[in-house]
Amino acid sequence: MSKFKKKTGTSENIPTSALPDIIFMLLFFFMVTTVLREQEILVEQKIPQATQLQKLEKKSLISYLYVGKPKNTALYGSEPRIQANDVLITTNDIVLWVNQEKDQLSEVERDQITISMKADRDVKMGPISDVQFELREADARKLLYAAVGRVQN
Image (tube, rainbow, N blue to C red; front, side):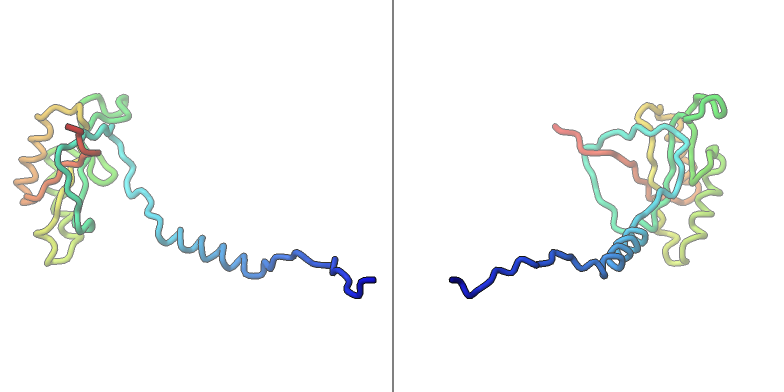
């Protein structure tokens, strides 16, 4: 009676020839855009909260100092230590470290260097004021104190 036949031989193939290209483009994208940790932090970091926060514009001019109790207390003791890059330094080495950081910048940007101090909340004010004094001696006058988030009033 019916002159028309139903087509039952439909194929459900998904073209996968472009799939490897897409996967490699995604892999390449994430490899290029991912920033790996630049330094291994050797001191404890419990960053305090802040009442005012300000976002930084140019992060290439920032150098980081970490102040806190060493994670390896058997090797470094339990007194607060200062970490610059991947090494623990003393307050006497801060001027030398600042000069090395300035040398890595261009001539125009050397006066714009900013030191970001990430100090543990349990560190007393004595070591922090020693660091501040040495930074003044090194003519690194822009100093930031890192904080986690805003305190709710």
